[in-house]
Image 1 (cartoon, rainbow, N blue to C red):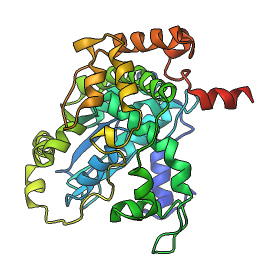
Image 2 (spheres, one colour):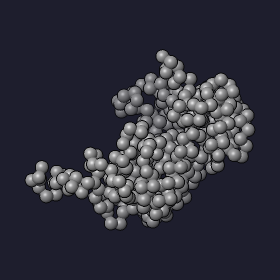
Image 3 (cartoon, rainbow, N blue to C red):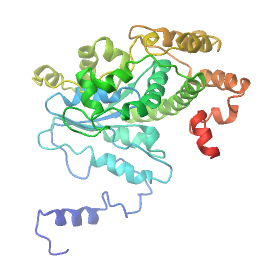
Image 4 (cartoon, helix red, strand yellow):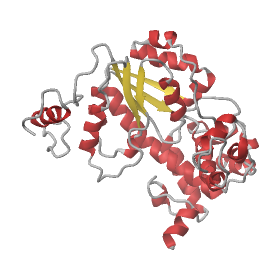
Length: 354
């Protein structure tokens, strides 16, 4: 509409298209210059991009951030992705998500690079004021948590409705927050985790970790300021870990002045002491010890840790050892194992055969 009233939504859309900004049909610029939000942000607002891996406890981190008054962070901007998802369009979507509203002092989003293949993370980093890398260094416990959640999901789905009358799936969150009820009992149970499923999850995480760190390096190198935060650090001292982030944002005053009493609405589905959650704990630990990785990636020590501890891991070397053990035991080929998108557990292989 060429006669759209000034200031209307239609008029703003026309102006954006004339300027060539964020129009999905517009061809990407050949020069691939820096990303720019579709409209100017609040003058004193700080733009934040959080890069994370799925299953790393980032929902907990996001909820703690969202509880601070003046912080407006979108959680998990994209939950799936493939090479045909048009990365340039996603870059423009990320830029528009860095547009801070009138009440925001800090705005931005969390995103998993795995779900946006082909995106130029250097451009995304340059568009932000601060890039935060959210990392969970205990790969073994992360693998157990993801595997148990998938394994117990059908049992949780069979739980009855919660007290608010919501459906089976929707009632899970309330039961967990109350620390009681059917879902909490299921997640708190001691179940056997098949070695092959655990091995598959470890291989997937190690493979994706290498790609994740590469994308993070590109984004942080281009960002004006960058900070790395860990799940284990937040467990040990949430105030200190959040303080490091707000110092990087230059907004420590927001953290100190926040009077919000709203805390996180998620709880750990897997206890810190894995002997209480995994019936075949000794079998899994023995398997990890036989990989012979030692200090290069102490997966067995990760599994046995009973308190939050930060680990270092040579993901490429560890992945090679896991894939070699997997092939030697006849549980899959080394070639497929080295690709995190091809390595599959027994359920996925049976489904593919059908």
